[in-house]
Amino acid sequence: MTQVTLVRRIAARPDIVFEALVSADGIASWWGPDDLSTLSAAADPRVGGSFRVRFRTVDGREHECTGEFLEINGPTRVVMSWRWDAGGEAEESGNVSRLEFRLRPIDTGTELTLLHSALSTEASARSHAGGWSGALAKLQRQFPEVDRVGSAGSTA
Image (cartoon, rainbow, N blue to C red):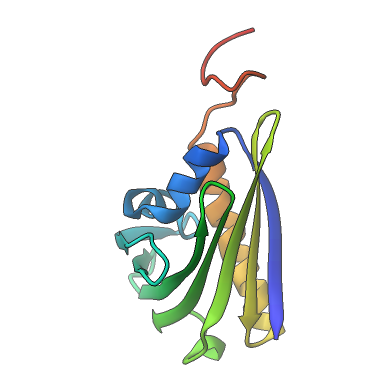
């Protein structure tokens, strides 16, 4: 089994980032790399609740991932199961992997650690790392820089 680990700093408080991880609107705004547009997103953010996200690539192919919320400890941690129901990596067909987000407050906002584990192959892990890198870049771009007290758009 293989794993992807990515760490990013986001200029928003952990509670704001947490909301972007668990709400349908939040997920729709950043999941998937830049070449994927989100067609739909649904989320029932409670332990045992499900999520579903459908994407379309620039060449018109559609991909859909689904899973279940396994742990929700707002605003510090979210764990989900993950599987591709349509499209995605061929190696992952029928595989259920694990997606974990850890949030830690820092002076400039939040340090987010993403762990995507139980992927089938190294090639799949590399592909998922690329996809998650693009998605996290979209999440980072959603938030303006913050000053030391955490208010957006203010100047010191």
